[in-house]
Image (cartoon, rainbow, N blue to C red; front, side, top):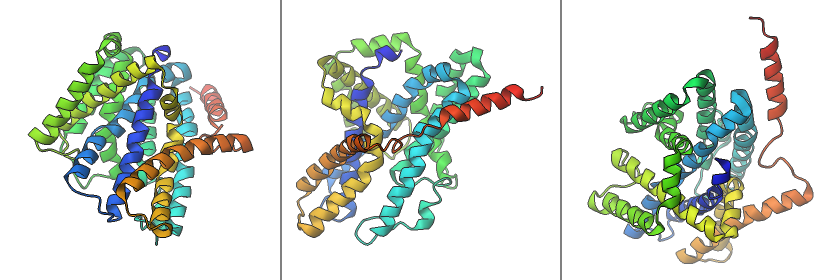
Length: 348
């Protein structure tokens, strides 16, 4: 399966640009920078209707192959390295900066909120928190029922759909609500990764058909039904799935053209995701406070460009000066070895 997924970096590249745009645009809106109206609300809703579901879907594509290669415990410990570790490190770092700069930003963070990160994720880091939970739970389930993978995948996707469609109870914990909302997209990725027919359809779908399907679906949802991305129901679920398949089809075609710059952004998507809020906020503060720039267009261009470029530049700097563990840790192998040894020596 891995050899057929060269397009995934292109999809990540598209997705992370949309993520940065969404947060920059919302930052301008919250800063009362004359950035509102129907156009803003429509673009915001279109972007938020699928950009984070896309990342859950892309992660789900690799779940099954990673589980088979690493085993259940190996997969969980690997995600401690690549998801939980950067979640903790960057939540504390960004949160501390937000506390220090709270007089200049839209955020009014306090240290109590920052250090409750293991209970309540904050800012953009909720995605990593929920992704780790989903990986860990499914690794345990699939390891326990190894010979029933096809049945498990079908049940998982059906369960994800049901959890998504069940009316949300405001009293439920945030972690539970976010997991219910996004499990379906992760399981959809697993389903696609295990379906040869789905992969062939994805590879052979004419790009114009994908584009038209995406446009029509967004038009029906936003114009005909007058809904927005947070109107959760079967309509928003179908819209997200159609939009995900559009991005996947677009990425397959782009990978054949060979836009290496977009693929590179995709390979840097974790670093961009971790750093772009700080970069975008600092860009907005500098333009406003130092240069008295109030043009929304300039803010958008500068915020998105620097929000994408500076993390990529930081990666090269970190590598050059030997900062190895900014975005992942090397603890999964020793942890898994200890776990396996304890499990092997455990009396029956």
